Every structure is written in structure tokens, then in C-alpha cells.
Image (tube, rainbow, N blue to C red; front, side):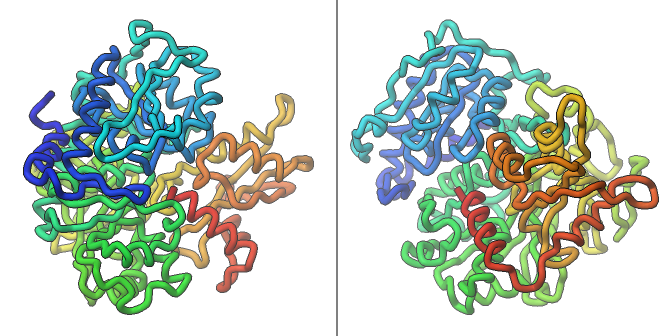
Length: 553
């Protein structure tokens, strides 16, 4: 195991604070000693199986939280699947990564038969003993058994297809799959050293983080911000609270009941609390540190949050999965309440940022260009996708910056005279919805395939729904140019292919898609058609609640 493996921080905390609480999940608290014991026993099972990749099907369970630790201890690449993805999407990820082991908790067992039935390679199944009705308690290790499945043989039969990257697989910590413009998710390969560089930066920036803190965990395991929750919390010896699904949409009661001191969420969660009048002054008095990441943070929302959490240090973080969780930060002040959008801030110590013109030259102060990121937190690239890796990760030298390799984010930004970066939108059609990155072209590709016949292709277009132009999106609307199509059937088919946050909340039929003066689809005109009135109608409000819960699972 390399000395840059972030699991070392967890092990050091387990040595220093063996009896302190490390994890609260499903109503139970596990000490660092107990969590380490569980993780090591699972790691021993993983180490006995050949192959570099291990996938996990499950979330918000002891087994699911042990899985990334065990993978690192066993030298495996961790691939989290969660349980909210459609079966077809999870199967596609498994086919591309070819894991030799699949860890499955009780939540994932119901999905297991259908998921493995069509796979064309062998895997060893490790299932939680809780699935057999045996409780997992802090005094014993998770019961992990090799399950015989229809296509599951022995470890010696396992197939390792390789990463397709110019890097030793042992240096990769985890793979996270994000939306891809071609219709196929991209697997971002994040290294152990990159994760550790991120943890180092966060722990150094926030001295409030220590063993006495109680930290929130809202994110799904397929969202890279969940890696922050686990590895930052356990690096300082604090306790991670896995917020139950029942409390994910409106978590203020849970946060106050358990006196959580560290809050980390996407801005959309705070916006939902504000919408339901739960972000009142003084509503969250115990919170000492509040971090927001994943999407633009409006100034008025930040002001409402600061009033609700008057004792907190509040910060806005920015960073794509390709730069390991977050790589810039900005401390929010009272005067920022007048800003339309809170700045994304300055780079972490091991990172560089540059704003670049289309010709590859650096922009001047306050000039808008594409934001490039370089430094120790960069991912290796995209799993088995050298073309995309070469397109987004480039080798460029800037005289005043040390980084030799850069990730082209596609985000537009400007850097002010004080060196603070400001988000200015996107250069393409990628959007953020409740923190999740979505390539609208991927949604369109699936919708086009569903609605078209071999002899009758149809035109489709997808836009985001927001209350007013320039505000954060809260849904997706689709348009299909066809005289004959079943919107209900199309929506049902989309739910089988895409995660809930990518499924359109409404589909409209048009005789033809509107075009602009250049003969291209007029997306702004389509967005105007679905922009709701100031008050959200009852039907739309229900859909928003449902989607919010899907985000939070």
C-alpha cells in the first residue's frame, strides 16, 4: 500500500481515538475500533480474490461505509453503485469495469438477481449477513459470504479488462461515473494521492474540524462529495452521521436532534429548506462549519442560510469530479448577500487555476474564459476512454504556474484583481441539477432512441426548468417533434435507463422544434415555454419533492 493512501488517516484516528464514535448509521453508533475491525475483516475477504476492481451495491449501511475503507486496505479500486441507479445503468458500469468482486448490502439484495443475470463475466459476491436476518452489531464483523449466483464462479475465473489509462491500477482509489455527452457515462479514475491531497487541504483550511465534531452525510455514494464526508470526517477523528432517507429532504429536525456541528450539502438542499420555511433565523444553532458545493450558490440564499446558522463559518467550494471533490473555496461574508452568485474563490494549496481563451492563451483580469485546473488533485483520466481523456486533460505550460497538466472544465469564469475566481456559466450544454452533473445531450440521446423507429427518426430537445431566467434549475423538460408518440411510455422507458435526477419531469409533443437564425434548435425559446409562474402549482410541487428525495438517497 502506498504511503499516499488516504485510508492511513482513518487508521491513525482509530489508533488515537479507538473508543470515540466514528459512524452513526441506521440508529446505531460504531466506534473507531469497531469500524476498523469491520473494514479489516472485509478487506481480508477482498484480498483473497484476484482482480483490481471491486464494486459496491448499497448505501447507508455499515457494509456500504466499510466498503471504500476495505477496498483501500486490500489494494482494490472502489466502484460505488448505490441503489438508486436504474438496473441498465448499473449493469453498463459493471460491464465496463469488470469487477472481480461485488459487495452487496441488505438494501442492494433485491436488485442483485436482475443485475447479474445479463452480465457476461464472472464475479464473486460478498453479501452482508444482515440479509439473512442477522443483525450487525458493534462487537462482531459484518458477516460476508461468497454467494453462488447464476454466473458467479471462482475468483480464478475473474476477468480484469484493464483501465485503459497510462497508470498502474494500484494508484487508483475509486471510479465515479458521471454523465457523458455521447449518451455513455464517463468513469473518472481518481488516485490515492489526489484524494489525500484533497483531505490535506480541507483539514488545513478548517481548524474547526477535530475529533469532537458531528458531521452530516447527505450524499449518495455515487456522488463524489460523499468521499469528502467519509475521509475528511475520519481523518480528524470525528463522527459521521448517515442521515436516514426519511430525513434527507427536510433534515433540520435530524440535524438539531443529533446536534450536528458540520453541514455539507449542495445549495439546492438549503433552497428546499427555504422553500418550506425551515430556514428561519436561528434554525440551526449547533452548526459550526457549513460547506456548500456542487452548483452555483445564490447570494440571497447564502444570506438566508447565515441567518439560520448564526454560529457557523460558511464557505462555498467548487470542483469537478476530475479534480477530486473540490479545489477552490471562498469564505462567505455578510456583504456577499448582495451578489447574484457567491464566488468560487481561490485554489487549494496543491492546485492551480487558470482562465483561458479559445486560442489557449491566458485571460486578463476580469476577462471571462474557460476555467482550467491543474495540480495534485487531478484525476488520471477516464476509465477505458483515451479519446475523452486526451480531449479534457491537456499538457500545457504557463510561465507563472507550476502545473504541467490541466483539466479543461468547460466552466466559464473570471478572476478578479484580488485573485478570486467567479463562476460565469458553461461553455457547453452541461448543467448541474441538485449538485449532479448532467450532459443534456445524454438525456437527448436516450430520448431520441426511445421515441424513434428505424424508419422514422425524430428530433428531440431537452432544457432545464427554472423559476426565472438565470436561476438554478430544479427540473428537466423534454420536447419531441413527432405526430405520434406516447409521452407516458417514453417517460417510463427513461426511468429504466437513467438515474432519477436525469429523467425529465415533463415531456411535450411539438410539430417541429423551434430554430434560431442560424438554423439550430432555439433552446432559450423552449426554456421560456416551461418556465413556471412564481408560485409552483400543486402538481409541480409534488414532483419537486419526489425528485428532491431521489437526489438525497
